Length: 228
Image 1 (cartoon, helix red, strand yellow):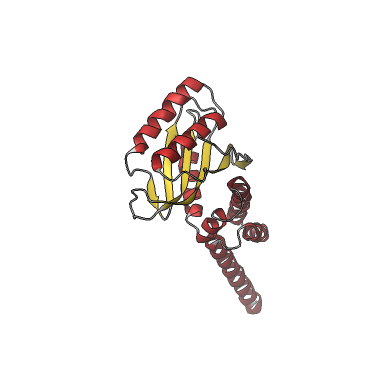
Image 2: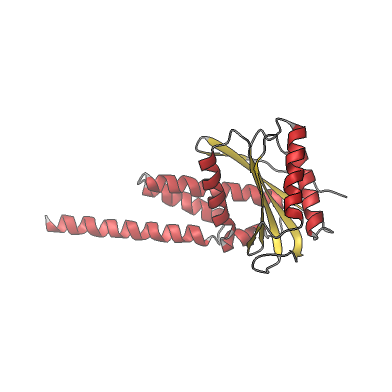
């Protein structure tokens, strides 16, 4: 099988943890589930950092067999999630977004065709709370219509995923700044995120709420000053 090795890794800080999201375009002839999983699992085995290649190969084979003939993994709206889980052979987090060149008619919970397969796994030493939070956060973003449209664009997936990582980093930094009541820094971060993914409804909502907070703060301050 002819594989496209389009691997563009970029690490971004997430507190004490780091995750590199990898983008991958499947070959044009691939659409059947068994072929998709076979291609991407082979790619994964050659691309991720390992502690024990034999253990990792065995672990990935077990996961692939579990997903091969079932509808587990379907989360709807064109996304299919393959949970690699804890893999003792991994030395780092594994996060890959594999785009299928055309809609794949697999068995899914909402009967919608699949365009994006999301793989996520982690080593034994991973921070489990971080894993849960990151998977939830990335899931929310993948279902953002603006992010989805960006990932389905004409550019190759490694380039689109690199933009996604910049977007996520800007968004997270803005959230942290907002929590610290650094509204100006937060606004700059959200605007940077929108510059990368202009259609993001989640970031637009955050900016609108921030503007409302700022307006209300000014109103309260004015009322306080007028009352003195």
